[in-house]
Image 1 (tube, rainbow, N blue to C red):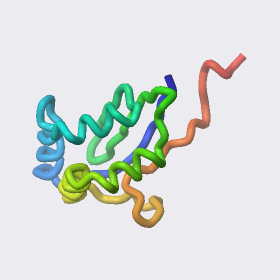
Image 2 (image 1 turned 180 degrees about the horizontal axis):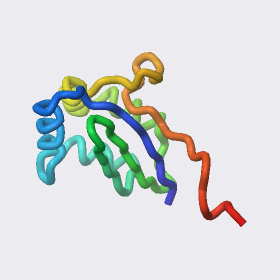
Image 3 (image 1 turned 45 degrees about the vertical axis):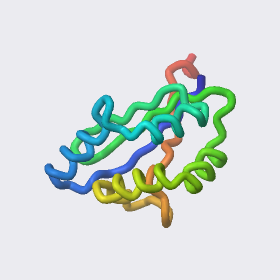
Image 4 (image 1 turned 180 degrees about the vertical axis):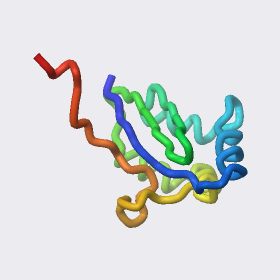
Length: 115
């Protein structure tokens, strides 16, 4: 299954970071948001944090289409409400494009590819 990696920053504020983590604790992510993730063909998603930097790892199935997911999310008022709430804790990376929250990482090395 393909893996996708993304970066985003949180506001460098201990209370905001704690609140963001609390919103993502088991059982705290809104069920409609979890359903929108699963129904898009995302098999697993993890968000990791170091300081105020976040890394999101997504494992997707063959039915996953990022553009379709973005369109469905834009049309889902509950997902939009969640994204607006999360936006109060997040800040854009300095090199992010306008309107881009999560920046996709590009692989530059894989041990599997080495002789």
